[in-house]
Image (cartoon, one colour):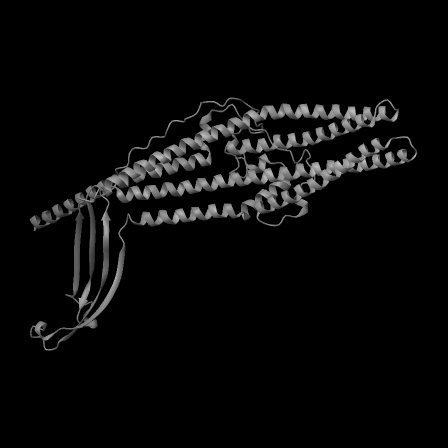
Length: 482
């Protein structure tokens, strides 16, 4: 009795050891150890900029929520609608769901698939094969569970493919974040462009009204012989120039509204559109700098490239495992009987177990070519990762460089507007007392008009550059600052 118990214990221990060894073996993969590539850029950007001050202290640009960065409530509402309705962002979300489904499908290959089924067979045999049976027609019933072609992942091929699918899924999530950042920046750019074009339109309309009034006075003076026909014609040129600009900017505003509507993905109420380029519209917070270029590794597009590189690394493991034996298991357990009423009675049980090992011997360099292709794909992914880092570094460096120059340019343009406005007023006074010709008035008026237009354009460039810097530093994927 004791010997029988010890014998059974030994069998159980051996079975447990075999299962443990099998689990350990299946946990191994042939993937190369992943090492994060070194950043192919300088440690610091060329120029610093201002810091983002808030009650909680300095915050990295990536963590600044777009509700905190954009202070115009109308713009915030448009961004919120765009995030809900934009078709490009919707496609990015659907790509995530597709990648998640592919990952779940690949992950399911780690577990055996169990199928249940039943069948009824009725056949007629020829007399030469009846073997003395009283009737040539026979029937049978069987029902059972089966495991078909389950791959024992000894060398990690399935696990590597699952790892690659997971990395692709995470890469799609980062692609969605990158699409969100681009969408927020595009909406902000379109909104600021609309505001500046409306400001330019308003300036043109004011200039047109002023010049029409001046032209009317010049006509009266011409009728009395006070001014010449040349002065009158020159006065008319300013009127027509302002009228042409008014029509041109009206077209720009209509196009800007269409572009903004397309980005938002739905109709926009007039109350949500900017009336002018005022301080509220330009209320964008300055951003932090003086941080190392290593923050680029937190950008969504860089993270997407890195996870794609990890997926390529995992595919190398799957390609390596293809050189080793492939072990599959097929098994079924059930019951069979020639009568349905006896199908589940004692003595009708059936089972079958069929392990199969396939060892690759000759595949016409297909396996070696598959491994070569996996290595090439990894090199491509590495090059794309480096390119994403370098492109991000240049984008940030360019935005930082423009931050200082645009600030100085705006200050100079404001001083220019003050100077041209004063010159225009003085030239009008001198013309009225007869000390200057109308041509000098016309020149000073055009200079003042151009300077005011230049100031609006410079302000747009400065604010758009802040939006660009916010985007390239990775900000905008959060709604609010934590």
